[in-house]
Image 1 (tube, helix red, strand yellow):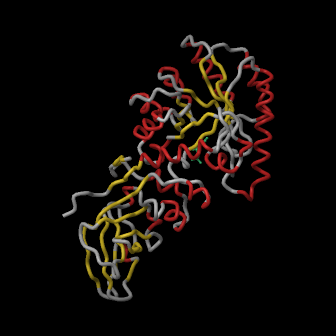
Image 2 (cartoon, rainbow, N blue to C red; image 1 turned 180 degrees about the vertical axis):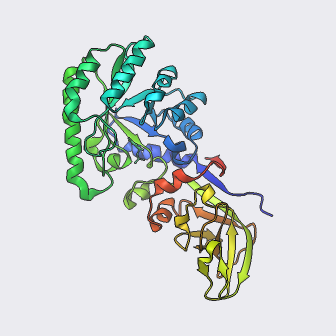
Image 3 (cartoon, helix red, strand yellow; image 1 turned 135 degrees about the vertical axis):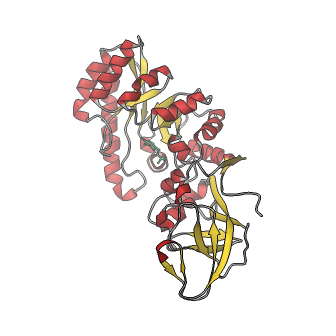
Length: 367
Ligand SMILES: *Cc1c(COP(=O)(O)O)cnc(C)c1O
């Protein structure tokens, strides 16, 4: 019987390689913020953040305050930015030395009130402006109001100015992205004129780093690149996927033509077929979109397509032409059969499959 079960193997040497590669794209002095939200895109936020802290990354970013608290509780000392802070979590930011992104005037007012209440002086915040993504952010038309609030309240201080690109990975949107960069420069100029101190400026995610040198400003925010994907095949060659998802065969069986596999009989064998059961399912993050042959796994060097519906704890693959047995290793993705290829074949993106890997799958770290 197999000695190892389903696991996500996380290669910290690959993480280090990607970090150095991405940094090599920056001018000296540009700071690097590592985005470790959503459990470091599924890789395990604490372990990933620790390795990056050892590598002397400048900043961390998470989406929610609870994620930042987890890092603080586990020994992460570097500055942490919360990209999507919420009103009910602003108190905790100050208590745990976490920097919030302020993305509306109401939120600025609320944060100033809390900072005053806690007798803070120059508590660092980042202001996010909407330059065209139309997600969160302050509108450009409100800049004067923001400036007057910021300059008249000593309890807070602008540590950073932020915006987010809508289509940095899509070079068909070059003009739109350049217009976002231009607007960001204008906001920046207005703030620089109004504030008596310097502050960080950051607008680029991974694809911004790789595609828009002009958008690096004084700091970049990279997530997917650290984990080995550049949203582009040429960059993917330079980056190394960090995670490999592996499982094992639990059972095999031959069925005759006309017999079905899995729930609701969505796969009917056209001929005598052998299938293997893999110890992984949608409860682990292998979404049902990967059923019906939309994904293939690698067993003993050969590709086996999924059969029928993905179950919660297992799925079946066709091994009619593969010599394999119970306990054999199954590769769902690794550096060769990448998460990106798997995701794109099923109509989604590497981000989604990686962040979807559930807690039930143990993370195994190695160098
Ligand atoms: C998630 C996120 C990032 C990281 O994007 P990648 O494409 O993974 O590099 C950067 N900035 C913001 C605001 C984000 O939400």
